[in-house]
Length: 597
Image (cartoon, rainbow, N blue to C red):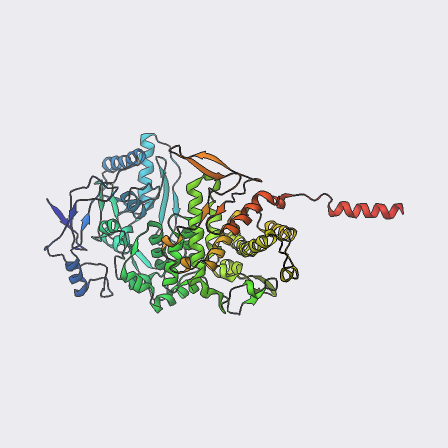
């Protein structure tokens, strides 16, 4: 079976394809004892892009495996690629057309993707797009104008990019490129490059794959992108320290991809991410807005946000991303000391209780999505819940800005992280406050619901009344409104982590959370619904509007309070109540009385 030796990596790439690409059970081509030439591989490099002797020996020791899967195209994708190949023949072009990056990765994993980026090797993206427009006209297909995005390094657009629609597909087209970084910036000097150079400049080997449209095949020019995809591991094509120093944002991208795909981080990536110079580069080279963009993708996308934030803490980067103000926190006068974090620095709790609360909230969100669509949360609600869980230790603290005080949670998300969506910062601050209040109110409810004791000692103690619980619960509902089910979920996590040692024992082991979460069986006001297989399920129906409140496992007292609040208190929807008499009506009535008198 023949093969081709990659001129850059020295890997022998076999031509035989794999039939079962979904499981990545592929025919594996092993270089074995074949001599591979020195190339740009992960490991130590000489600083000028050439592989060191140690790197070459490491390559020989690993005997990298190259897998060549068959990508299964959709009917529409096949139609578009056939159109491009027809254009290529009829115009006599010498261009090699390649789809790059995430689309190739996702298709190799058996996932659908509409993020099609085409790289060309002998003309600009705009010139190629003009050829496509000519062919569309010739064949009588509908045509939309070409959009040209000029190079804008500040927005991570390093070369001119043409955007257009080809047979219904939105496509970006640009040149293959190579990049040179300078010490004081994560913005590279970019120029047109070869396919090998383009692959090696990318952040991770699994993102460096190409799909060669001309030849209908996957190209793995780093020599290990497909094998890393199969092994579910993130590896940088070049030395990870140099990769991260060039662009420190890649540390957060590593965290995001690891959580999204449940891929393991290569040991060298972990070691590099913990280096002090990488931490320093993150502070000086990456804008707060870019931090927010990456984290919003983490908390709003697929995968495990808690795993991502666990990496952030393990790398000791949580205080870089969620930076605190230069001035000391102030204690909110409305929150008693016993109800705020016991730590001198509330940020220290991110390493323990906050991650554990976030993990439990993630479990509850997953349970809701699996049980019924009516119970699930929106993307914005999930983002708010994860940020609130991670920053929940800042409850009761404020920051003074221009003589005005504001919640520490709001300040961190809005001013430090520069969250683009103001709603996230405001909602997360309200959610943290409401959750801590609900956690305290469930204890008040338990005390108010307990039988009256006739002992002298008990009769001398002031007793909490249900009317007090009702009034205080109403105040919280007026602030949190339709998101009160979300606040109850976070409140439950706060209660569990504070009381249950099995959860605090090991925050990153999901098995510790299997006995906690929602209890659909004991949820009141529920009715039967059918899943896809016709099995009965208990789901919470709307009590007032769509409360989405459910029962909870293990902690019966909290579950009873949550169900009482949703079903028996009569309070849900109180934020929509209209007063019987408005202030204007009251003033008018007083004036009329005075006139009569």
